[in-house]
Image 1: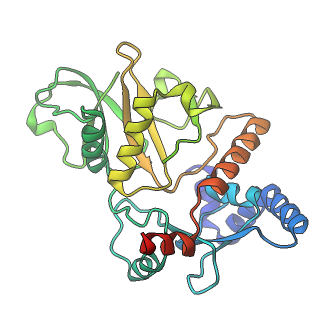
Image 2: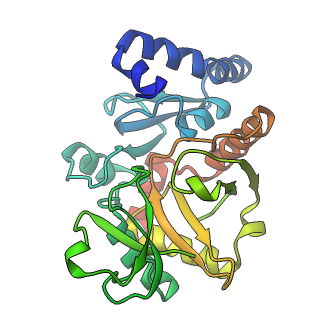
Length: 287
């Protein structure tokens, strides 16, 4: 059992850990609030509130945005925040979305099979393959997200060996930035990251790839998410693997100075892109 897992088993110890972890960002938030004589805005997250490990929580703190989980309180922006693979209909979210703009209100299913259908439409080719007919190496991994259970298998494989809870992927509005990660070949599906860096989206993705990624997000009802991609060195083709609307971040193994700069960049992008809950809804009705 990892030390993080042991921490989570003790509610009070884990709460203290989260308070310690988020302290620098809470101090930055207080600095912004004092300078502005109040929060710049209030963001509602429902039905869950992101924890300090989440990139959007850190970005809110640096932007001077107050975070609330109370849908009856006054708020300026709203985000449907639910860390599950398939989201069941939620009456409160539907009520909120009917009255204003709620980011990610249209997200229903982010399983790899559903994501792959959106990818095939947007890019013209799928990421998943039929392991009984495909020839060559592919990745077998859970249809669920964040399992880190991928393994390379050589196809084709007999139908009896195909696991129904797994998928088989080919191996080989705005996008504010990209995080470039390098992992060791022996642990390419684990948590070990050798190096990590941030760069402008245009430096890592072509205009067609950016349009394709945004089309995938629109098809999934996503307004805010982390999109995991890999690029085949031989063909140069980009493959979209996962879409995660509740991401952690910034990516681990970034130097602290660069990680703070990455969060500051996200805070500026969030402040510029996050729609006003009431005024955007009024504009939609007027249009």
